[in-house]
Length: 471
Figure 1 (spheres, rainbow, N blue to C red):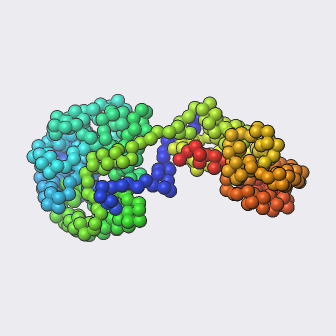
Figure 2: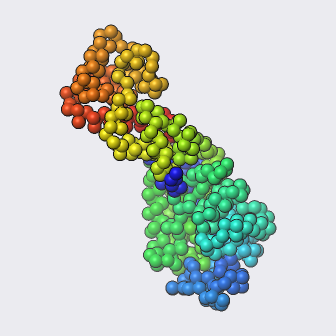
Figure 3: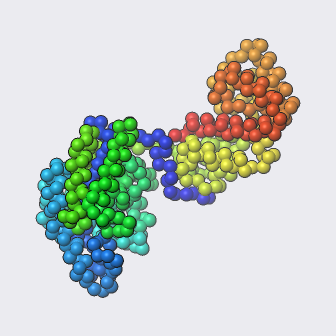
């Protein structure tokens, strides 16, 4: 059984109304990563020095050695950059979310006090600012637990949000399994929060950003001047604000680092951006925890039976009748690659229709022959499936006059005699008169044309049935 775990659908074409407080058109959320003192360093028991996100061109780890230049760049973030950013955001009266590495927070008591006094949220950024991609699962689970313990010891409160950053394939699952976080941000896959089902837990995900992020001062391609950063942030804000004005409010995350944007030649662009958004009405600048609480209140999660998570018996029992009396289509679809993209009406229809389209001509003809005549003898005898009964009733075919019934009977007879299978049409797309016109028109087609048309109508009937069952 193939199951594809990645969710390529998301909210799809119809996105929820975020319903931000006071009718805000966009939520602009600033994150300040506090990593200084938690980075790779032999003083911290690491095998090598740090090499990530600094102003040193082509930086590489020094195995078994301290890298004084690298350490001093990180120290700048703690000693100068943090305070410059603290003055900026408190002066602008914009609260931020700190992604705090627990060991870094433990080495920064004055900065932690300033964060708390300002009313900023301190979310967890893991135990240490190191790579997790090769970390064994048990070791990462223990590191998460220790990060929570140390964070609570240092700040006085357990973290309610989590972002690792340099994460593994297991990180989100392991953090969700703790059952303690209002949100996790180790994704970059949407402009809105969403719920992730992890076992019995409904975990809120608030996606983060690597593009509206000052880390690109230290990567290529990236920012060179503060104006580069400002221009990108402005363009992103303008697009999202316009979408919000058109009824689709979104969220904009801005990622910051003390040792990067805290430099005077870079922070100017951030200052300009803050001044820029203050010139607009309907801009909400919350902490991440505020977004999480809002989403949980206004968009609580509702579970439903997802096709990609069903066992075969349940799947076939539920969807075996979508193509009339042809459970083999559901059986073959179940054996294929199903995933979150198939947990919607459109998605599951695609999986089922692909089986139908690639079946032999005799198999497809068998599906056509499984369909009843419109307003025929089976309908009169009450022997249609529940779906067919409802569909025919939707077009008034259960309430025909004697003359209409005679007409349908004759058309059915003539159609089957010519083409060898019943006339099939998605009756829910038509009224009674439209069905009669289609009947008369299609009766004159050649059988190859009609076979193709009947197959398309079978797929449409299946789609409409799935729309009654799935979002």
